Length: 209
Image (tube, rainbow, N blue to C red; front, side):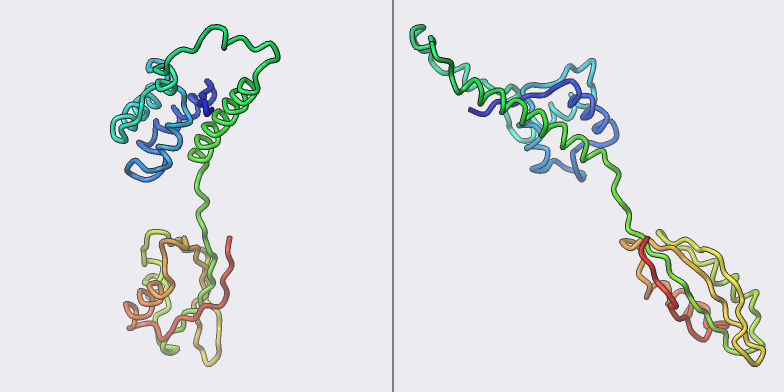
């Protein structure tokens, strides 16, 4: 027999979770919401856990789920009182407690997992940006480069490095969010949009952080 359970700790975590979002993940109800819903024995106290209660009612409505676990068991015909007497104890009671504990831990696990901040993958990249010749205005070159703005791109420290014959290159570090920034887009913005000053851009080093 499967028995669901929700402890105060689980409701506290879920209330914190649904204060900032409508669903366990994404912008619409998914199987994760259904799985969590089924792990809960009944709805929360609306006064104590208003955000969790809002989510619970919504999932119950959109998924057509029963609002109370155990309704089917309550509707089953009662057995003879004599059959309820078990002089040697019942294994079902042990299983029921185990299922309660399992359901409680499942609810708490989903709540903690959803609240855990997502790790953002980032990479540090060192660039060498070379001018056309020794007559290139390096101040304008640097201003062009550092003026490039992209979501997920942060410019770090940079310096002019002599390469010979009076020519200097601009060496600069950037930090990019891997899911947002493509290095081809960075190169296009640097070289193509700055063609008046810049001959080429090379990636010197990359390191995940």
